[in-house]
Length: 309
Ligand code: FDA
Image (cartoon, rainbow, N blue to C red):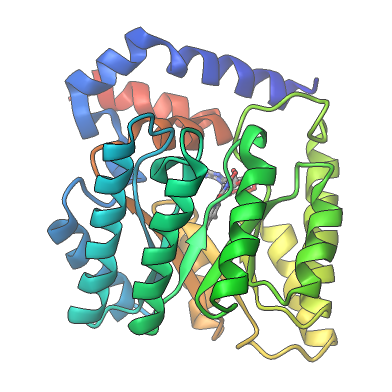
């Protein structure tokens, strides 16, 4: 295991600890989560989306929540996401939604999860919107892909899309397979703590695989969301798309709310489509821990929030 991966394991262990969770509950968003999370309430989030849209950014809204163990909570989450799709239409926002299937009960009742997703896709299609299925840890990769394929067969690539992680060995085959279906894919590096049985342990391999997957999907003529803050990868893919004469309408860059804002701005100014992944809601702790683990320097940022004024 490399130094980076080891540090990430330690950070995930520390922040996954119940003491840290209680601390987070006590200090709430003051812990620094408001750097990465738009707001707890939808109304406040809408105001932020409006600002992002006015600055030329597209948005994907993520109602925070995952690993739901109670079917009633899964239904409640789906109802809120449905409400978000309505709000996007009524408020004329330039935004779509991103959804985690375990928030809709994937791990407890896949049939219920598919039914809830079906309702959301129906609603999105009726309002000309789009639902992106986020990819979670490797325990649910195959199930997530199966659900996506089922929905794609019932809807279309303009209504539902998926995320693929370049740290997984299997993703090469998945991108080829999903490319045959013309799937709209967001390519990311991967944010979960995984064993070396399933992921490349070295970051250089994850980065190399990222370029391979993104180029393959772009070359297959499929819509590709290039979701990274990695300047070298972005520069390489811009050059690749130019060289292949791929229209700027066939792909977009995506970045996380509060991360690499200078780079977000530069890309918009260069005329690229840039979508900001904008999470909101009260269940921000797991999302926040992944953002901290991605960049150990963020740990100092949290400590500063706690102890400086
Ligand atoms: P990398 O980690 O190499 O970072 C490149 C540079 O970006 C760093 O040097 C730093 O400057 C900056 N940076 C990256 N992360 C930062 C942070 N947290 N704070 C401050 N600076 C940071 N993952 C997943 O498993 N499933 C999913 O569905 C998604 N969805 C998703 C959507 C979108 C729009 C994005 C951008 C990312 C995801 N991810 C994800 C997360 C992804 O897997 C990955 O963990 C992060 O994007 C960080 O990796 P980078 O590609 O930015 O590269």
